Image (tube, rainbow, N blue to C red; front, top):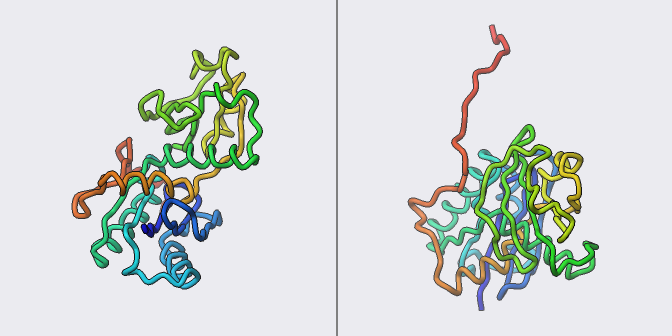
Length: 235
């Protein structure tokens, strides 16, 4: 039996779940702004109490590794590294775009998403990277990647080869809505990042022995964090 605590904080949503043998037991989520540093610990405590699971009973802790918000990723990964170090549990990292696709596939199978010709679709999760830029990657309906992870500035020529109408081009994630009017022919669906997208992927990684070095693991930022000087006069 495997018990995995799953944490996703790479966007506006703070999401924590507990899974047993690849099945979600309980979930806590909030989209009330980026207050992840305060909420993530509270959610973990609530879930452990609700499921009557002791921290020592966990077999691993999984985290969405990015790409995503620099601050959100930093909070989630720092929390998970501290938890894994203190409990002496393995750390499992899951790509945040892979996780988002897993949520989309689960929602489709549950009848929440309605997409014609899903079996031939190209799935395009998008995580907001400000302005018209997104972190993205293309997947097939089985969750297999068709491209590398990239940071894309979206314009009318973006993903032209996928928007021919031959196959459904499905976009989703917190960066997708701002791109919908620009990407003619794309199908926008509502799919939000969630710890439930980590559940099966984390179990697969743990079963395969794919865990991270707690001391050296860092989030997948994709781009360097840029510090800008405020234009406001403080004095």
